[in-house]
Structure formats: structure tokens, C-alpha cells
Length: 445
Image (cartoon, rainbow, N blue to C red; front, top):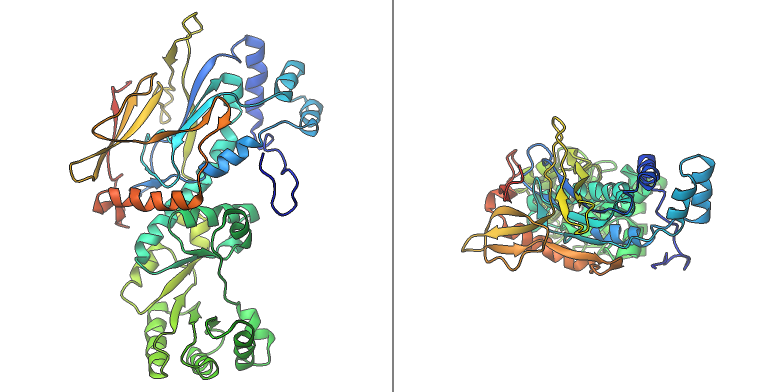
């Protein structure tokens, strides 16, 4: 079991990051006798956020870490007993809970589409149903952030992006967001915990408070240069930008690393600052823009003399889509007979239907290697190699043992490859439909 690197102690259990109704179901299932029935659950999105053309899988590594710590401690059990949430049989079941089933999933960094079975959980009902909340809370958040971040990276082109949204969200969500953004192509984060826990490169400049606490702007710049050297980034819009630029170059010389602009008409400011820097001989000094940027404002700045962007609020809120709208649904269960055959089950609720049956996914490609469809095969047994494309589901947990961990760098590289595999119109920021269709074979309906 992993430990918190800061303390060396075992981190807290994750089992109570669970909705009450899951334990209601466990309690009743133990009573009815179906708790140990073999089941298959699936995580998928019925649709993408309005106008989006693809989604990005993120959070799988965090989910595996959470699963490893999904244990009910003595204190957890005492709480459940005091509240009447679990009775004797349920408490005994939870006391020894260890997920013993198997999980398959799309690898982190993959793109997904409506109906993509990005996580498939197979195990007995009682042990699989309690994972719903932890799986959805992690995947819904991280997929939403990575999907927004991917669009921002596309808009930025070759210009680097700094994730700097920690002050705009929950403290732990900030760490997860920094990880998801880096996976999707951001260059650095301002969040030190993300750097420590996940190895995400960190960077930071200074706030207006640093300038304001000094007697004047020149004194503030001089102090920062003295402490950090001329390659630092000076914040230039606390007072008058032209005055700040003149002082910055005078104090640092033409080798000043960068200046940051956080307000005003950013396009106009960038052009004026570039002209002023060039006129002062600081042609290599970079211009970093921040200030409520999103993918659309970044795209609008593509023709301006900008060297990088910092994105905060829009990133950590999914740029208007703070959840990926993923659901966790039972799609197959044992028939209860001696053969233990899986039978498809599905909801028929108006507006919230599901498709029954165990599924396997293939990204179908044309002769040039461009994706043309998300092919979902409905079958109990894993199909063999498909010459029409590449298999998307890979083992993450096998018979209770985690087998699918990988470095974050691998997920980052995978996303670049997965996005490049999609048709060119996938990278448009305008509203549109999913880039490729999802095709079920055979269609269970």
C-alpha cells in the first residue's frame, strides 16, 4: 500500500467516500442472497458536454490509488454501526472488504466518445457496487479537467501553458486538476503538492502584493532579481505597464527572462510590450499572459507576440463543463444458474437509458491510421485481435491485484498520440458533434 511521502504514514482509508445508498444496497443484497452474484458494471458518458468533439480519460491512476486504500477501518465501522447504516451481516462483510474482482479501462490520455466503456468493473455485486461513488467522483472531475485542458493546449499551439488554478477550487481538487492538466499537455503547474506527489514540473512568478509591499515598483523588481536572477518573470501591470517595462529592463538588462501581464486588453498590451522590449534591446524577453483565460481567448491571441499563458479558473472548472457526466451502471449479471452465464441488463428510464451486455472497445482506423469510429463489441468473452483498429480496454486490476499502474509521462505521451489519431476537425473549438460515431456490434437494442 502506498504511503504519504510527506509523513511516511499510511494515508487514510477511502471507503467512506461513498454514498449512503451503496451500503443500503449491500445490506439488502446480503439479505436477499444476491450480494455474491457475479456482475459487470460500466462507466460511460451518454453524451459529451454540449458542443465538445471528444473527451479525455484522466484519473485512472488516482482511482487505482484510491482502490488500494478502499478499506473499512474500525472507526469507519463504528460510525456505520452508530448511524444504523450497516447491520451485523453488513458490518461483517465490510470488515473484511477487499475488492477481489477485475477491472479494465481505457488508458489515461485516451480520447473517448458517447457510449465509450472507459471503465469496466467485474466482481460480485456487493463488492462492485460500493465502488460507484469513488470511481465517478475521481473520473468525472479529472476527465472534465483534462478535456478542457486538451482544448486549451490545442488553442495555444506550441506556446507553453502554466496551470495556476489552485486558488479557485478545493485544495485537493487543485492537486488533481494540476495532474490532469499536465496529462493533457500543460507544461507546468503552480501547485507544489502536484509537483511533490505526481512529479508535475512547477513554476511561479509573483503577485501584485509583492510589488505593493515594497516602497515602489523598482525596489520590488530589484529584490526579485537579486533573489532569483535575471531569468525570473516580473509582473508588470501593478501600476503603469510602460513604466514597469522600462524599469525591468534597466534593472535586469536585456537578458530579462520574462514579463507577465495580468489585465487590460491583452492583445493590445502584448503588442505594445513587445515593441517596447525590442526597442530596449530585450528581444529575447518573453511575454506571459494571464487573467481569466480560456481556450477561446487563447485562440484569439494566436497571432499576437505572446510566449506563454497562465490559466486558472477556467481550467479548474472544466471551462464550463465541471463534470464529464459519467455514470456507473450495471450492464450484466449472472443468471443464477449452474453455468453462471452472464445476461445483459439495462435501464429503460426515459432520458437515461443504458445498453446491456459486457463490452469491449476498438478504435477503428482507416488505411492512413485516422480514427473513423468507436467500435463497441457486445460479448461476454474478450475478442481477439481486430485488424480494423486497436483495442482500447486494458487490464487495470486482475483478481483483486492492481496491474495497470503507469508513469504519468506515459499518459501524457498517449494523449498526444490519441489526439493526433483523430480527424483534423476534432481540434476545432467551434461547437460540433462527436468527432467519430460510436457503433455497437451487435446493437443490443
